[in-house]
Image (tube, rainbow, N blue to C red; front, side):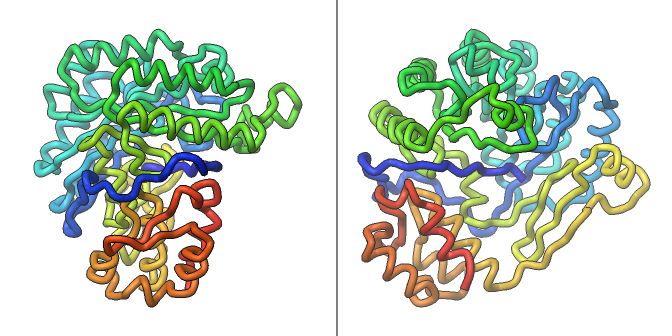
Length: 400
């Protein structure tokens, strides 16, 4: 499953827009497919997601295992597709083509097909192939437009490579491009972050994701900070950068439709919206997760173990967890509240069989009195005041 990072700080000055109806709501009878490519040319210093150096593996063997797992999946309801990693763009072009063709054939009714690409790994030939195969959305892992910050993160590209990748994607015809950005990078300042935002806006992507850097202790960057080689950004600067993000991007015409995500009207990421609506999803590949709504499954987080299981006709699922009705209801509430749309009361009733106003009566009352929640137009949603402490609010919906 595509992991959705949490922003650690919020904006108390700029309103979190809650009256917008442009966000497309996927059908309740739909699901998403996520394919995990656990390869990177080199591991980023901050990354805690499962991936391994591509040079150490037989990529074709992994792709064939993915195709076999895909062939066994029930994809009739799949409407959104996302190939992520790792770095799908480090696959040999012939293997990436084979995978995309197989997914297209297995999921012919998709409305959105996204592939993650790292700047410096894409080229016109790859982008043209993907475009001609029907991929209609590219997500570029820019992270920063400051070359020193990119070095701190362990990225192998520079800022010029981001501009080149954007230009090449436009040249072949892509009309839906997302940029991933990270703020609160060690050594960063409000001015440096402003410059990254300005660069991103100048490239005119349809979508921007902006995440606060999460320091994981077991990563190279986490260890470097512990050893005093880098200093983590303080909480107040982190918050100021997030406030700056909201202010700058909304003024530039981007809708703040989820805590960490901004889009031009009509270009919200439909695949991630499926997660926030708690719809079923299918995950294929090592470490990928799937959910039926009543059961969550996690594949082996090891390439060799995963491939051996697939090739021997065994299950590649390492863990299955039953989801109780109460857990599903609470998960739905928490995920819904991450978005600009919040909880649609009538849809929530239809989806869960419960009235959220009655089920969560006490936390709703308390947080409304505190100015952290609002109920309007048959919706329950976070206010601007709630964003800096969103986890504090959401945790009260996480269990009953």
